[in-house]
Amino acid sequence: MDKRSNLSPEVKQARAAARAETRAVRKYLEGLQATAARRGRRKSPQQELEAVQAQLDVESDQIQRLALIQRRIDAERRLSESSDPIDMEALESEFVRVARSYSDRKKISYKAWREMGVAAAVLGKSGIARTRG
Image (cartoon, rainbow, N blue to C red; front, side, top):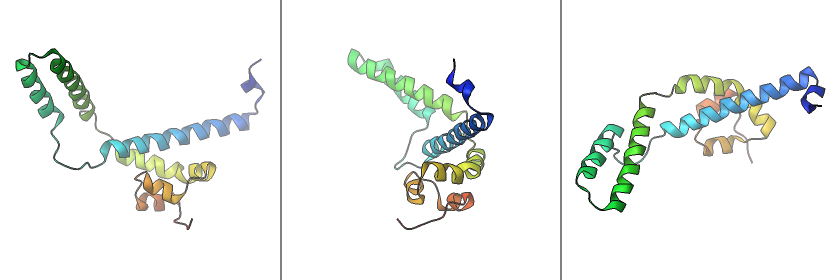
């Protein structure tokens, strides 16, 4: 017999809500990481792809070609990802809706959220107060 069938509807609903909160938090944190400013001048994925292809056209060392092929594959992946922009506004909105409950349930502190890169203003909107300790 399935253990889940013995659970009350309230427990099933609470578990589903917890999974939805976790999904919202994960997507927001992944979005923050993907859109984070990085140091230094970066080539666009298209520029990187063109540069790698030019090197591939002249490279004869097989080990170097292998590394360049991998760089080309990585650049192609980044290019396809960049054409599908991340809607941080929607992710933030959902995060704000669930963050307080998630923090309380998982005992996540304000400081931990800040170390993950969540802005103080977003935490304020979420109702997560800055506390000592």
